[in-house]
Amino acid sequence: MSGTTSPTPTARIVAGIDGSAHGWAALAWAAERASELKIPLHLVHAFAPDIPMLGFGTTDQSSILAEGRRLLATATARAHATNPALTVTTSLPPGYASRALVGASHSATMVVLGAVGHGLLSRATIGAVAQQVAAHATCPVVIVGHEGRSERNHRRVVVGVDGSSSSNAALHTAFDYAATRESELVVVHAWEAKGIKDPTLETDSSWPAYESHLEQAVTREIASSSAEHPAVKVHHDVVRSSPVAALIQAADTADLVVVGARGTGGFAGLHLGSVSGRLLGRTDCPLVIVHSREV
Image (cartoon, rainbow, N blue to C red; front, side, top):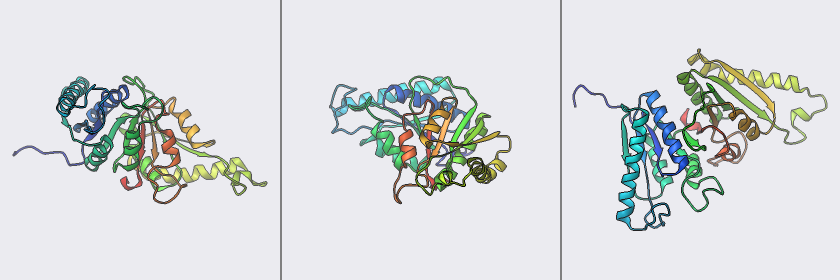
């Protein structure tokens, strides 16, 4: 088609649709973000024919397909209620949702889904789909853990940093979001004593001096992103606390929390670190998981 320009393959947001309360909240967030970035929104509802569809009350494949199409039509209408001009596409692939969303992540700017979907254990634990997609997607994953449309407008983005490559990637992602939303960026580094060699436990140690050292390290870490987004106001906190507790607390007055998929601890080859994994479904605002390869 002459005279038209197609978006690049990665210039779209993918949202997982399952009809759950968290899923609808994730759709609302994804539609708003796609509108802000002026990029298409792609909706994915996947199904595995060998699993009883508890929400649909049937195991007949034709009925499941029909219900899936109806669900996607409803989701499309909800997205257009946010922005009638938004380009929305859909897909209804067979197979497990986590596999479909991880596959879609290869051609996406981000993947957005609810923390808890339909399932036997949905109210007892974080959804398996959210865990698997957060661990294996190749683009940032946004996990929405609240129900209903978020009315948050704190103009504040929180990012956890620890010097790892994933943390640096998270920092870039957080800066980009803060810049487009004209928000303050709060960079959090939390430190808790882990043994006798911890510098905060040494007899001649000084927490203020150690805090000052870390603040200088964080300042160096954010320098390049600050140069790209000079209008973003940056504040950094160095706190003596559990990273999970510090970020959950910071989320209370934030619109978004961003963390790296893996930090400086753990074992090589892990896809999701202890901090990012423990934050899933526990923040009062959407959580973004970023892998180091996205830098």
